[in-house]
Image (cartoon, rainbow, N blue to C red; front, side, top):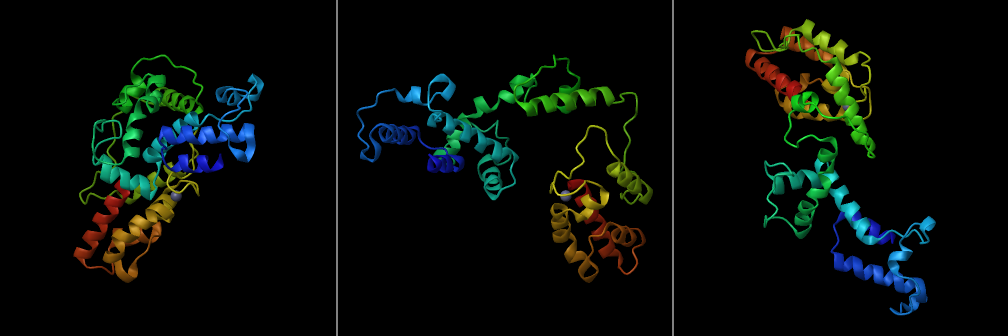
Length: 280
Ligand SMILES: [Zn+2]
């Protein structure tokens, strides 16, 4: 059983294969290592029922396979693994997982199986009553009934949407944070951003979403965080050379004053900085 669990966590297994494994399990249950296919006294579907319902609580492999398949979809969409990156760039191209043509001939048998799971995987949208193409604005303001869900994460989403709806000030003008001739945020604004990010925010998770290792504040995000540090390093190392730093205060000084650097280099650095800030 654990072998099956392992493989179905990584691959979607053909149902014929699942059926055969199940037959082996059933034969083992009634005849031991002899594995005689006859002689079962209770149907396998009964054996797979919960103990309270008179079964042995063995999971039906079809269900295990389905759940694992859905988990693969989840890992593909949420994960940062090499596998999900490869799938995204090679099979999904620029499309979203939900748009890929179901009749596609590219990709493996497993990929096409995963595409077929979309109808089931979509339940999140259906349960929330939000179109999958909806914008944030639509999700927050379009009138719909708030529901209680059996899946905890959906309740969390409902809560966040509610919070946004109540706390959003529609009267206030949008404020551009990027206003300045050089195109770089002014120091005072950046300081403000730092204090905003560092402030305790009611009802919002403060942990860094990128590395999940530290509190998310300005200095962590730019660029103490292992994730953003990596981006910063690969972009800025070549420009800054020996004066490379990922410390926020050093960077601020360097960018604002531009001493020790010729103009082209400084321009590139500022440009890279801006791009990484935006990207992260
Ligand atoms: Zn981090």
